[in-house]
Image (tube, rainbow, N blue to C red):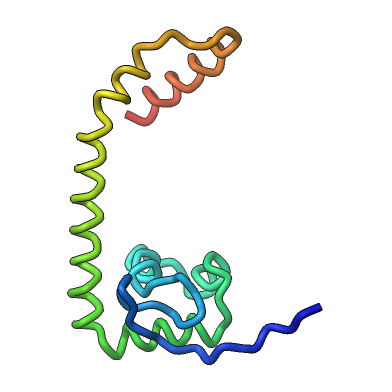
Length: 121
């Protein structure tokens, strides 16, 4: 059995932006949930963070609100542009796949999926 050495909860800047040290979780990941008004305990559990890590992240965001908010908006804009790029790039493939007949035995599940799509549109 190996014991993990506890990592001091701190915020560091990497090529991916601001993140919680010892994790791959960025403050922008946390911001998505804070903006949606999820409670800190939920976010902590979702990302498997310690109480110290989530508290450090939230405190950093609050203490540096302007800077973090500007970077967060940039991240959202870049994500939107990437999503649009890949939707356009993959459109012919998606259309071609949509034209293929269902595989034998999948008729029922495809009909159910189609009904759900209509329900949510």
